[in-house]
Image (cartoon, rainbow, N blue to C red; front, side, top):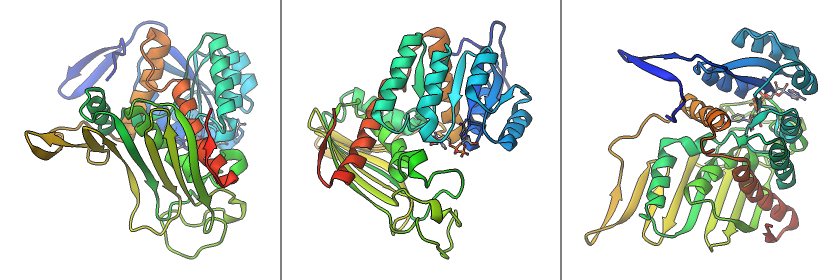
Length: 369
Ligand SMILES: NC(=O)c1ccc[n+]([C@@H]2O[C@H](COP(=O)([O-])OP(=O)(O)OC[C@H]3O[C@@H](n4cnc5c(N)ncnc54)[C@H](O)[C@@H]3O)[C@@H](O)[C@H]2O)c1
């Protein structure tokens, strides 16, 4: 865990924490599903106080108050930003509102963490970065998978040169039948797209980070919708999605060319006729390779091809990843420690997503600026 500046005392497996000083005051824009995971993580931090919440739905605000005991609730973020003293805003709205909410928070002098994807387009991301810079505040993207132990294992191997120059990365975020049946995940105008921008983004962000964040220069890809926009009687994990408003893709395949010649292939689906779901990336370099799911490194040693597996991998559960990503944001804001997923990382990933979608629309390879 990063140095939090909080004194911790281990007591028979329990960790007792104390903090004396000014707490970091966090407010939420968007109090839906994922804000609950943020709240759970923040409640474990003695140097953090949740001070306000904003949502357009009364029932979500009632839920927020129940979870946090915080009664400072608003239906308009401008009102909240005006009336409450806030250090940092966590933006947990649908994707289409990330940019306006984050920019309003920066303009109000707050640090920002915005959930993934950073926004809908690279242009919006740039505006968010500019607003934070102008306010002299931080902006961080909720890319928790780069904190996952398996990503860290591979990143360290890349940094030590064990893989050599990375030539090829394959990213897979594939669901056989997993069209979200809540929220607005099927509505392109509010989300920007389907599985590529919603779940492909996770695997792209961790792979791009692990490979050393090369600059994307071209994209080629396609998207298809064949299932989500029709009613279905097939038994599946999330049945009954809103097929009438479904305007995003079911399957997206993309290929990215980086400035250094490396290629990233991306496969993302909400619905695809595959044997089982896949959440993984594999990486091939000129000295070694790696696989995320097993945290394995493949290389040559003493005249032998070896597959190396870690003898110990720390826990990488969802709550741990969220705790670490929020801790990194808050420490970056309060102690100026390095940010693992700054706005620039969000922009680079957005250029990859946007490139695949633009190429699908154009029917040919497109340049990425
Ligand atoms: N990092 C992750 O693993 C992860 C997981 C799930 C979702 N997310 C991201 O988090 C965001 C929210 O997803 P969710 O699953 O919580 O969706 P959700 O639909 O459950 O929550 C979104 C909330 O935003 C509220 N909202 C809509 N318009 C608003 C406005 N103008 N002002 C204030 N609130 C408004 C909605 O009423 C809703 O309560 C999305 O961008 C999604 O991609 C990230």
